[in-house]
Length: 416
Length: 146
Image 1 (tube, rainbow over the protein chains, first blue to last red):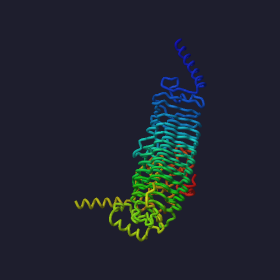
Image 2 (cartoon, chains in turn red, brown):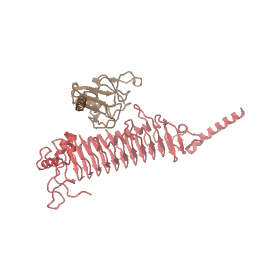
Image 3 (spheres, rainbow over the protein chains, first blue to last red):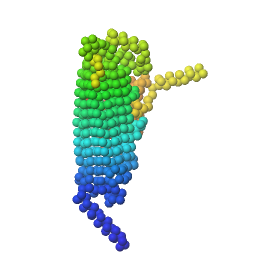
Image 4 (cartoon, rainbow over the protein chains, first blue to last red):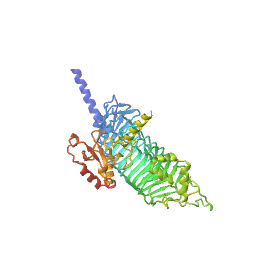
């Protein structure tokens, strides 16, 4: 009996000292034999703007609600295991930072978008150096602004499974910076829906089921120096305006409906200094207007460009088209786009005045590409003598291709 | 042997012409309207024409926009997925439709189909029938549905 009283007395004393500690030092340690041994418990007793320092160990917690400004930092070897039950972190406060944690096993559902980190109505948050494994959604952000997502590595196991979520998913947000992340084996690597004034740079997105990066209804965004390899399609930009895309690499997107870059209903974009290499289709363009394509490299694609209807006032200048099966496929009789001053490896003309510009125009559309458009199976005839003959005859006297669809000033040398 | 081949080809021929719903290969099939890969198992939709050609969609809003350009009486099947039964198609005319930010659909219309409006989770929401929902969706194009 006596002993019990002493124990409870010690407990109370410890509890009080713990509170005073939090007040002064503003740093709370969490570990299996600390006073606070759960993250949820630590969040509960922490004051605004405190720092939680997680000591090495495995924390089996899920649905950790962070409703005040906190910084959570992990020592090396900190693992938070959600045990496939719902979310791991739910953040709905401003100024929250998570740094150097490993989160794994997020719940899966058809009806709920479970995420390793769910951020809602928050501003000025920072998610850095995180490793998210076996996630459904990785980072899901709704109605937030001024966030930084940097140096994270997000992956899941979506190989053929469609029951997977997106790596970094933003919805109705603005002013985000997403850089130096690695995302793979997810549905979409990075997904923007109704997001504005945001920047995506230096990310690596590969082996994703659908798109490496996906914009929907998102205006005034930029993405630079990203690499997209072996996704369903590299990047899709749909129903968006004023997007800048420079210095990105789109490679190895192979498949019947695979594109390096898919543009659908977009206006006023800049596409410069990108490389499209070994894709079934480099860029598929539909319903897109006033887009400038400059200094891009199209290397060994099936189709470098596939233009399908309702594309006006686009400019393709100073690009390299190197060894593509088709440089351009076009399905309309009308042309309002400009294709001057590009380098085409298939160009067979000459330059008698030695000014670096070919003396005869180059026609990038082959007649055979029309036939393939109509009947895709005819692709087996590619490289046959018959196809070469019809292509040649079209080149000599164009009947099907728009008369003005040509490069009047094809360059003799590749642009370096 | 010859008879066998004949028999087989007849069967194949019949199979090829049959007017029936086709299964969607998630992650492989592409939406006939918006070109996006179909991955969402609770929002996929499909129409099959009287001649047996199937068009698959990643979202019900794409199906409705597709039908705007077509004649609905030419369709043998117009199918949508029941939200509570992933991958199970129901008849579009018999389904009940909900527009709610709680359930996001792939093309931003937040449109979802249910086999009935009697379900606990969405009790207080307004449901619409097929005719009404088509009018609502057609008022908005993708670019101004914000």
